[in-house]
Image (tube, rainbow, N blue to C red; front, side, top):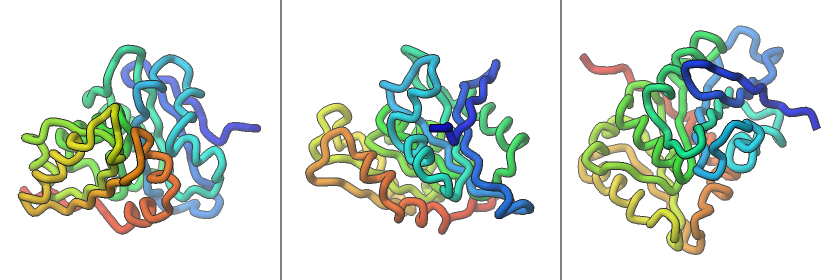
Length: 215
C-alpha cells in the first residue's frame, strides 16, 4: 500500500514523517496540526518504524484525518530533547499551512515524557497537550497552568508507574489548571491504543486554540 506520509530528512533536527490532509478541500485554510512523539521502541534511523503505534499508524488507515501530523524520530539511545524539537516546529510552520493557534502535542511512554517536558519548557507554543503514560518533574508542572492538558495512563502499568502522570496532574489540579486525567483500570503499559482510537481526543483538541500570552 502506498504510504500516506512523506519522509522528511533534516540536518539540524529530527527526521520526521509528515501527513498532509487533502488540500483540495481546504486550499485557503490553515490546518490544525498534531505533533506526535513516539516511544523508546521506535527510536532509530528507519522512519517506517514510527508507524507501529499511535497517530502515524492511524493516518495510514484514515486518509481523511483532519490534521497535519508531524511525527519525528528520536535517535538510538537518546531521549526527546526540546531544542531540536523547537527547531523542527519552527521549520514546519515556515514550510506547511499550519495554523499556529491550533498546534497540539501528544506522545506515548518516552514520548509522553517528551510531551510533558516540551510543554513545560515552551507552553506558549501549544493549544493543548495529551501526554500518554509519561511524566516529568512535577515542580515544572505549574508552567502548564494555562494550557489545557488531558493525560492518560493505565492503572496496571508496570513500565511507567501511574504516579508519574498522577504527580503532574496533582500539581495542575492544585494550582487551578485546566486538566483532565483518564485512568484505564485494566490497562497495562499500552494505554495509547484506546486513547488514539478515541474520536473524543481529536474533538477535544479542536475545542482549544492557543491562548494569547500575557505580557
